[in-house]
Amino acid sequence: MEVHPASKVTSLFGSDHFSGRVWLDPLLEQGGADGLRIYRVFFEPGSRTHWHTHPGGQSLMILAGTARTGAEGEPAVEAGPGDVVYTPPGQWHWHGAGPDGYMIHVAFNPGAKTDWGDDREVTAEEYEPPGG
Image 1 (cartoon, rainbow, N blue to C red):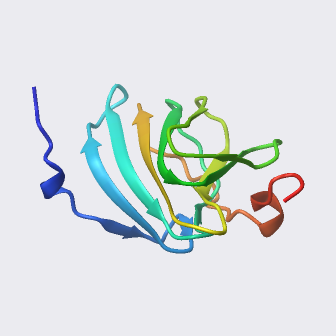
Image 2 (cartoon, rainbow, N blue to C red):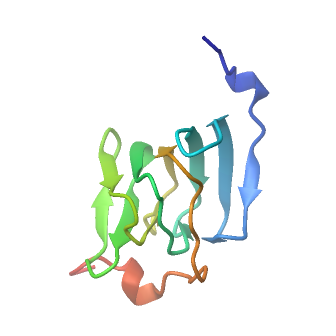
């Protein structure tokens, strides 16, 4: 058994694969194809990831605020505290905060590291849910 104390986590401002200001806290990083990566991510209003996939899929647990997320070929949707968003392996998607407040989620990424592809930013049109 291993304990990874929160006091040892160093918040990293993520800029390479994000639009807006985002802080990424690596809580657990086990390497390899069978490894698990767990991150706590803090998004300022309107901030979001670029388009990406996860070879092992991804689950997001929303802790605070309103999340916006979209998958390739699907409209953006919103999720709130306590909701879990699952993205299957290999599906192109993005996620971030709604426009009116901060959002915090914990990301569970099994398997290989994130594939950022061409590192394409999410457009304003892709960010808006239907009727938004």
